[in-house]
Length: 243
Length: 218
Image 1 (cartoon, chains in turn orange, purple):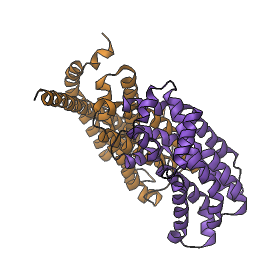
Image 2 (image 1 turned 45 degrees about the vertical axis):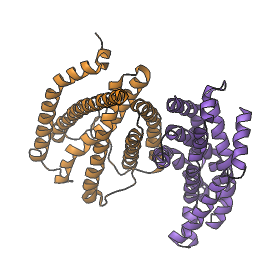
Image 3 (image 1 turned 180 degrees about the vertical axis):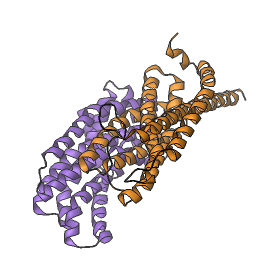
Image 4 (image 1 turned 60 degrees about the vertical axis):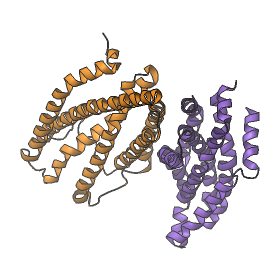
């Protein structure tokens, strides 16, 4: 009994089918309560007014956008080291979700920045590194799409993910060096005394948890789809050989 | 290894090797800039380091799809992969050859194009130094991109999409060093970081490129 037994697609799918309903339900509860609480039951900020409420979408989306890439990095490593197909397909399944979350983070940020900073976009380090992350997602997905053979595609995208992670991190610090920031510091952190105040903090944590569970459910669901696609492909190849 | 390098250099310099194409592209790009932003001397002087860096980067990118594609088509890469020389070393040599035929001419041409863009006098040496330190990284990262996409039909555009985000840190530090040189600020920090990126790329990326190439020609 170890984690690796779920590298078997059949066992993975069985577990995924058992976990998914709970994940979907918990995600729905977390997001509904988190957003509902945040939107209707918290006071307006004394300086930002009601625009503060976009934080309940913006921060969780950004959180998922970054962690989806980290998850892809680990999945790619597992594929390169142990060559479990489920792992490679999970990385493939996570990429579009990360891309969409990056876009959501950028758009909600722009919508918030227009009234608050007076501009849709500034070349601030955080904003810039998110834009670069968006480009990395695009390249990663494009490489998956461009290669026919699924194993080669998994190999090459894994290597790209590894090298890309190093360069994404480099870019993150390079843009810090290159431009001064307008973006505020971290909204939540464990090691700082000063966080955002409690009224905003609790619904935010709830909606972050909801988004994370939504990500989990989506990845499980999409990995299942990818496994099915791979199987139909294998069946097709066998059919072509027999005829 | 030396034979590999000499072979690649010969192929590049002979007729049809495409030597000088990148240089010509660099020249045209720089000539087009005043047409697009206007001929005011001050404006050109302030954007000159960035434009020259961007031009060098794009000229490097343009010549990348020739780096491995021809050898892939005629089977040379298959031979190299089974040769006693490690594929990593072969790719490092190919990258070096690319730098000598593309990067080095760009570095040498940059001061002359700087005159066209009204680059202030004190900026010339720092521009050349920053390009000299940065273009090896561009060649090496490009080799990795070429190795990733060599098996893909019409992979040129895809390679640009993959390689350009990887160029971001090099461009930031390189252009920053050149810009600081022009305005007379301290250039040490960006130059050291730029050199660090180049050295790191040269040390590590041959392995990544060789791994990618092995997966393609397996």
